[in-house]
Amino acid sequence: MTLTREEQKSVLHMVMESHQGVTLTEAKTNQDIREEMKLNLEFYNSLKEGFIREGKATLDEAAGMFGAVLSVLGNIKDFLTGTKIVKNILEWIKGIVNKLAEKLIPVVDKFIPQKIQDFAKDVGNAVVKLVKWIYETLSYKGLAKLFAMIRYKTFRPTDEQKKCMELAAKKVYKWILITLVVAFVIKLAVIAAPMMAASAATTTAATGTVQTAGFAGFTAAMKPIGALLAKVGHGSLFKGIFSAASAGIKAKDAEKISAEIKAKEQEAKGKELDGIDDAWNYCPLP
Image 1 (cartoon, rainbow, N blue to C red):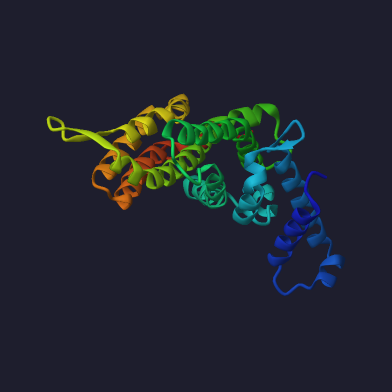
Image 2: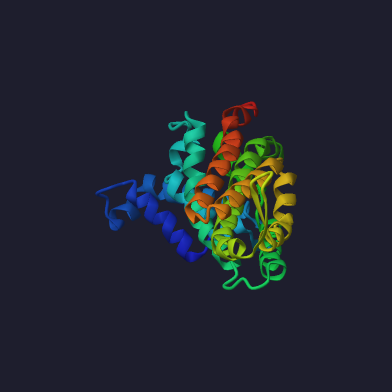
C-alpha cells in the first residue's frame, strides 16, 4: 500500500462522510460500505503511484495532489460504476486545478529571496532554483493516469489509455506551471520594484520607457523562466509579464504590477483550458 496511514484514514473518513448517519460500528458490519472503502483505497493508492517516480514523491503528490483530488472526487464508487458521469469536463478540471493551485502557490514562497542586494546574484539564484524544482518534480504523467482512471472507469488503466489522455494532461500541466511561475514573478517583482525604480539611470523620451540598471538585471536573471515558458509554448507570456512589470515599476504601483501580470496569466491559461473538452474526448471509449 503506497498510501500513508494518515492518507488511508482520510479516504475512509471521506467514505463515511458520504454515508451520513451511519456509525463506524454499523459501517464495519455493512458489506456495501466495506466494499466502497476497499474500492476507494485501491483507487487512491493507484492514483498516488502515478505521482511517484523511482520511489520518490513528485511535486504533484508531495505538495497536495492527493488531497486536492480526494476533495474534488470524493467517493469514487459512482465514477467507476458508471452511475456518475463527468458531463462538464471543463468545470470538473477547473475544480481540480484550482484546489491544487491553493496548495502549490505557498510552496513558491520558499524560492523568494529575503533580501535583494544584487539582482544578478540574488534574483538569478532564486530563478534557477525555482526552474530546477519545476523540472525535477512537476510532471503530466500522474495527471494522465488520473484522467485515464476516470474516463475508462478503472484504477489500472493500460499504458495505451494513459498515453491517450496525455493531451488533456499536458494542458492542465501547463496551467499549473503558468500559475506557479506567475505567482513567483509577481512576488519577486513587487519586492524588487522599489529598488528598480530608485535605481533609474536614464529615461528615453522618445519611447517614454524607463531604463534602470536594476530592471536590466532583473530581466537578465529571469531568462530561465522565459526559456521554460517558451518550451511549453508560452513564450509570448514571458514578454507580456515584463511589459506589465515595466509599466508597474514606471508608475511605482505594486498593485498595477500584480493586476497586469495576472491579466496576462489568465489569457494564457484560458487558451489551454479552452480546448480541454476536445482533448478529453479525443480518446475513444471501448
